[in-house]
Image (tube, rainbow, N blue to C red; front, top):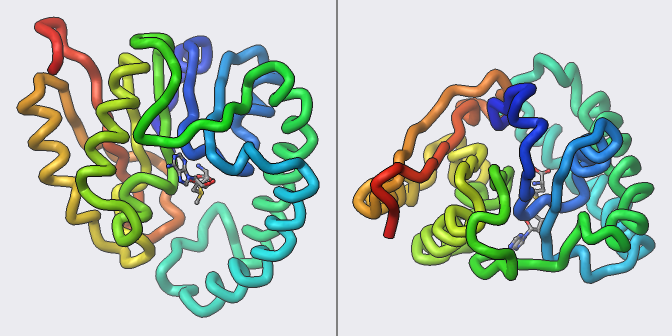
Length: 213
Ligand SMILES: C[S@@+](CC[C@H](N)C(=O)[O-])C[C@H]1O[C@@H](n2cnc3c(N)ncnc32)[C@H](O)[C@@H]1O
């Protein structure tokens, strides 16, 4: 999703809107340094588990109904995707209690983070910004991305589609322009992962030497 290289895995990473994903657990196990933040981390492991169980049938029926909107390659069927996702969420659930204790999971919400300026090498956000363009305004998106740029030198957001329409978010171009005007280097890059049809690009923002506003 993020075109992360073996070298990137050695850098300090912030995962924003990380939810019940296994990235932190897997990276920690292989010696990486990741902090995940999400408002759902205020809940107990039991509450999160119940919520995962309750939403699972809805997600599965959503996938069946919208079958043609997805690329069935790595995941061969909705059932297969369901199994992979549940395994990832179980890895998250096992890691959540030690991870909270170690400060690897933090209750934080964009567009304001408590981290210091430049604290991370990379900040990531998947399936939250742009994906929820109908729920969150353009101003929210810009503020959230600027906040990620404040805390990290390299920011990557994936995918760039508005909700589940298969169309680019209407915020993408204005935000790209605004970030460019503020002196950031902004590129849209192809990635190898495509599950949502047309959702195979990320927004990559880096700081330029001349500085940013
Ligand atoms: C669809 S999930 C994506 C989870 C994960 N990144 C992934 O790709 O599987 C969206 C996540 O955004 C989180 N979220 C909602 N509002 C947020 C906010 N203001 N700041 C950060 N995360 C938020 C939700 O709690 C949820 O876990």
